[in-house]
Image (cartoon, rainbow, N blue to C red; front, side, top):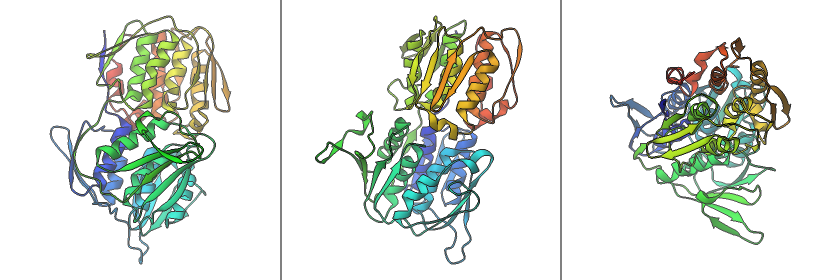
Amino acid sequence: MPTVAAPPSKSFSHRAVIAAGLARGTSRLTGLLDSHDISRTRDCLHAMGADFHPQSDGSCIVSGVAGRPHGGDLEAGEPVLLDVGESGTTCRLLVAVAAAGRGVFEIRGEGRMHDRPIGELVRALFPLGIEALYLAKSGCPPLTVITRGLSGGETAISLEESSQYLSGLLLAAPLAAAPLTVNVSGKKTVSWPYVAITLSTLADFGVPFAVETFDGAAWKKADWRALTDVVPGATRFVMRPAAYIPREHAVEGDWSSASYFLAAGAVGRAPVTVTGLRPDSLQGDRAILDILAAMGARIDVSPEGVTVLPGVLAGCDLDMGRCPDLVPTVAVAACFASGETTIRNVAHLRLKESDRIEAVAENCTQAGAIVTTLPDGLRIRPRPLRTDQRVEFSAFGDHRLAMSAALFELAGIDVVLDNPGCVAKSFPTFWEKWATIEK
């Protein structure tokens, strides 16, 4: 039975690097993900004054900026360049962090990054005293941020496009000059578990905060770990100036990256065990177990790891707004099922490294399924897959599309990808580990 060690969590790694980079003193991070996206976050923080010293044991010693990200000279107008590459997480978290610093910052990237929106976050930062100038397309990078720090006070942010806007504000808020209240606006929220990961990181690095909900008469403090439904207009975050406290911090395994191997256990010939995952994790993509079980796979969770065993899969109706990164994995698994699968509440996937709704639909169609795209998702009707054939798939420059397409090998398809190397964005050793799966 193949056993695969889950790589470190990309979401936790981003946030740990930022918290350590902002701390007043020296932290030691263990289990940090080594990927292109994390390198972008680390390099941007280094440009703002933090120092990173990788150790021979795989850990990293981080000397923080003591709450003062350094930008270019305000008088000269020469910016510090923050090159986020193709990492949307780096961009959205660090635009807010840079705004909490001092000086001039220029944030730019590559690929689709200059078409991915940042305007909602910039609008939320304007009341806090920053200036911003878009250098090409309005509402998207590249942009220049001019700041003397965040003033504190009150602002509002919508989570309809991305929860990362709120996470960026929460990471930056302790650096503000005065208490800051962040209200959730808009009509709906997506990807709430990623905000919980941000709050967990703040708590781990000693930053105080309060989450409050409105019961119709008054605001009341809520247990953020128990929150599952964040209601716009009735949820707010109360922050006060505080220092990030340096510490030793271990990064847990990544449920998103593990999902391809867990799905392989469901659709393939043999069970697959993944080690290094926390069953009680705050990661929303832990939902892959519930989804695979609902489709008919057998699940075993033990101290040795999480094992998924093959089963007769059936289609499901799935709201995946809390776990959108699983959509490519689940869509491919649905091609192996009997009956129709509908994936809903993921309209924001059109704003990722690719238009993930259209891209997933194209790859599943290439494999033989009938796919209908919806305004907020997909409908997948399985047909016999193109077994024993060479099929060319596109990764669309998107790591999650590349890794999910690999699952079609378990149907006997000779999978040919145009850009297999794009997995380095989040999981550089993916193909090496995938080779251990029984085809």
